[in-house]
Image 1 (cartoon, rainbow, N blue to C red):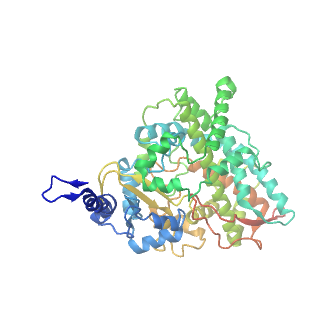
Image 2: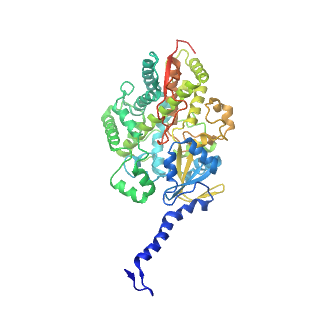
Image 3: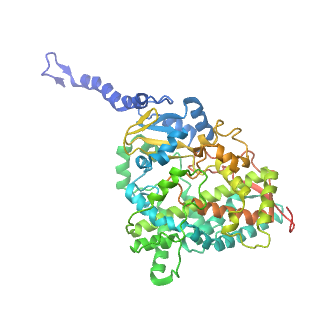
Amino acid sequence: MDLGFLPVPIPLSWVLLAILPVLFYLYAVRPMQALKKMGVPGPTPLPLIGNLHQTMKAGFYNVEAQTEAIATYGKVYGVFNGRVPVLVISDPEMLREIFVKQFHKFANRATGSLDLDVKPQNLMISSLLDEEWKNLRRIISPAFSGGKLKQMTEAINSCADLLLGNIRSFGEKGESFDIKELTSAFLTDVTARTGFGLDVDSQRNPRDPFVIHLKKTFSSNFFNPLIWLMLLFPSIMKPILEKLNYNFLGRDVINFFYSIFEQVMEMRQNGQSRGRVDLMQLLMDAHKDDDVDNNDDVDNHDDVDLNDDVDNNDVQETEVQGTKKPLSKDDVVANAFLFFAAGYENSANTMAFTLYNLALHQEAQDRVRQEINQVMEDRDVVDYEVVHSMPYLDMCINETLRMYSSVPNCDRIAGEEVKLKWLTIPKNTKVVIPFLGIHYDPERWPEPYKFIPERFTKEEREKRDPYDWLPFGVGPRNCIGMRLALMELKVGLAKVLMKYRFVTGPDTEIPLKISKYTVLATPENGIRLRAEPLRPGSD
């Protein structure tokens, strides 16, 4: 076919061939100039795919990749997810602006291409935006007040006693075991009982359906082709998968937990709540549009995160104000599922990693045990007051959280154009905060690969920038379950360390190999330890 209206007829195919390179440049190459225009360095992207080929090689959870990138490009650099520019920021002054001082401009997490508008993800507090997030945060916050935590200690101690029984079965035989399997079962029971009033017996029954389905929740395949198609062609793939109601969590997992939580709701609506004050009841009360008591022993200054500062506290105080809106049934079930899964996996990992560190550092373990024995003299229950009287245990947990942060990073989205020091961030730009790169930065943490609990003495904390340690995030959108997670950890660790000395065995992996292709800190080959029974009264 010729274009006859031209002075010299030209075949249409020639015209298309001439236009295609221009279209390719406009679509696949020109967007790659965005970071250069901002004055932001970074690895060279490829047309269309950006730096995704490097992401596929490095994986999600990779300490070396994050620290090398910071060392090479600085505390502000950029990458491309497909054609989309992403800023990676670890500069502490900028982090203070993002998390606290200009929080209102970074209030939302980045709803990326993998965030499908399908249930239950689109209703979870981690995905909610603006007023919807604030509303749910106000409703849930009272579940983690000091008063509520005090009421949970008996249940946590009861679950810890079952954990002791499981450890005893290996300790008496001198066998090594995967401590992560035992801490996962312990935290499954604790989360079920304290958050939802469910009696899950996963410690005595490792094939409990709860355990099986929780493990499936965190077994997503990094090399799932749909993930990469979503990253490359979000505008095409997102509506297709949403139309098909596709879910990366797995339909069987969602159906299982929906069924469980709907049964719990029905039982409680039929008068079987018996005055419960747990997370599930708060969600249900909001579903009924009842008034949730926000003043029941809520003390925002008790058990404060180590990285809180005055500005942070000011913002956290103001963000819980306002009128609560009722939740739908789907809201209740979706967030019950989220908190169950998060409460189980993150705390289980941290507890196992802490015992691993103490097994490798016997002097630190002796010091922790001596502290626990002194505090627990003439006591049987590790209660709320006790866990706040163990500073060295707290230091060991904090150092473990530095070394094995639950997640490798967090993200925020710029709600409007923002000026941070020399950098102007355009509206809707995704900002990633690399927790692993920060926690292993040798400028912040000399000898970062060494386990040194003394980094967290009061004197050392005062010397350090509060934005150098971010396992729970910081600011109004930090981890809402932080206080409960720390209490569960301290109760469980105190109970087992009073009875057992944890040591390495011939099959203990040193150093641990952490999977790069998971979004949580996951030891590839488990964490195998041995437990030696202690004589009564021994240190």
